[in-house]
Image (cartoon, rainbow, N blue to C red; front, side, top):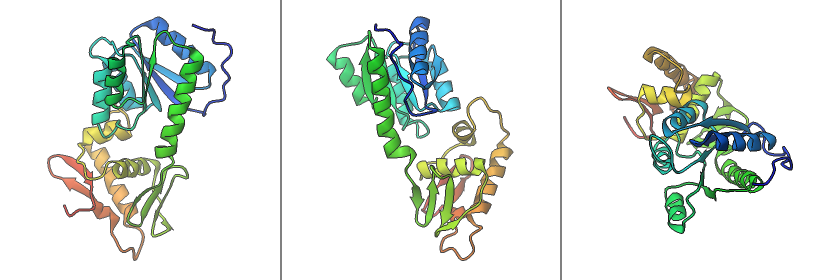
Length: 247
């Protein structure tokens, strides 16, 4: 593999990359590569550690080895794509499996790119930047809208009928989660993992309190044609959902 000194730190700031590989030397080498390129790197040695890190730290991209203890990388990729909370996280397979069938299988499972070992650090950084540019352009700056309710992730603003809605940062994250996952029922545990992180312990009533605060914020615009607080529906025995349909 080529030396790492050439890599300029001109990448997008604050992008966090999760390196999932059971070989410490690979994790260390890739971590150094990413740090020199201006990324924040975190790592995991197996599929379970990786899933916890993804839920808790919400990386911007996952570098995923195919062969892992406790479950293969492709199985983890499949799990991430099935889960509404993780389905949009970009994945690059970083693996020694070089056959065309393996590449086709990986791409068919929804991974965004496929890099084989041994690899060039320069190429790896370029692939990461390319995937992040594509994903960021499609998702992270996208204004989320339901009728006349708008949430702008870039400016961190919420408006109803062009009137600003005041809410706290936790309620903002809750609303963003609901708008990105409409018409699906989520348990309190799932909401906690997605909004607060898997390693944070909360009592159920804490989540209920923030839901009530969000509903109050959404109903604060007088004269609005729609009471958006009613779109956050309590599903008895299951949790909550955001739905434009009647409960």
